[in-house]
Length: 204
Image 1 (tube, one colour):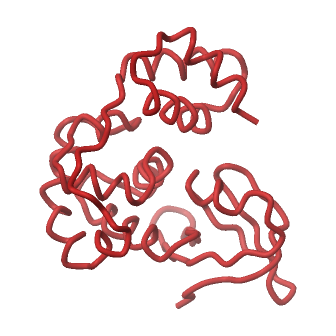
Image 2 (image 1 turned 180 degrees about the horizontal axis):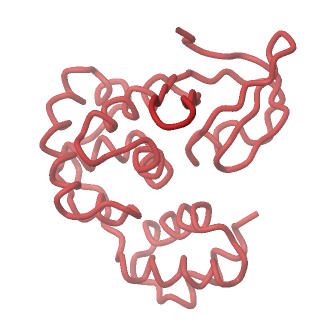
């Protein structure tokens, strides 16, 4: 079992990091939170979750990398929830920071979870019911200094329209969604066109 990999960051995209350690290049699937944390660094340490999918023509062995132990633990908790697979869990952690996710679950904020692509009402409710006690008992909420204040809700229709516009302009959906979420959390009253203009200045 691999606990973490420390090495030179040789390749980086919003979804994948390649670390070279002892002459071996490890490809790790990452979230946007981890991408933001390691962007611009030459040497990084990522905590690893190993996934082995068997069946079909070939077995599939995949590494997932996380900047913090807390993010990895949240990922592992998320994939225990019925209806939440590896890609959905990574999407949740790309849309919400670990602290934000803990806040959302602790406060039963279904709306914030539903704002994540691929999450419907039933899945959002299941995540909250299944994980609310676990994030407290695991100590993650304490480590992340999670408050009991409700997270700021983002207007899903404005967010989706802005992300759609940015996608049509040639930007990738996941990084666009992250930037749009941040803009709307700062000022939820902004109209779509203003959100898009601000996002264009921030997306790299």
